[in-house]
Length: 182
Image 1 (cartoon, rainbow, N blue to C red):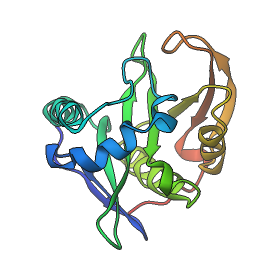
Image 2: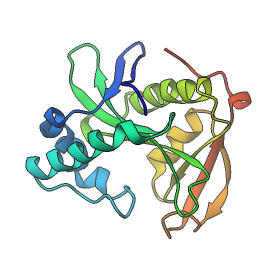
Image 3: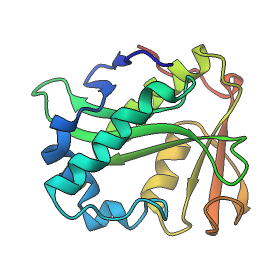
Image 4: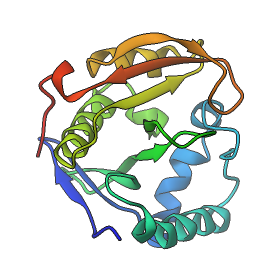
């Protein structure tokens, strides 16, 4: 069982989700510009009640994840505004590889938040003993690809292994970079 996680960067707090985050989370997962890049099982969330149900499921599942797996909210420390989400999870179909993924509200794009938050969670994951992390992105998702590169992730090729989609695959190991930690 995992205990609540809270990481801080210069501008951000990474913390566990709560169902009370539904309205703010809808601005992320309800935005078509975000949802179009999500995994097949996660589609555009249409309303606050549906978002609350998704968050409730995430909150219920969180204690059952073995660290460093989990899902977290990304909050702007200046004003407490929820601007994104992060997760570390085992990739299908074999659940052998850990995937790092991030989502931000469209109006928060272009400020380096995805890189900053991801660097913190990567640092924590490596402290927890994980040996490598992957990020996968559809070939036309230029923002995700650029973020993976800014994180110092190495492009390792293209595959249809995960999610039955053609994806670009990036990998990072503890020795690959000096990541930012809390």
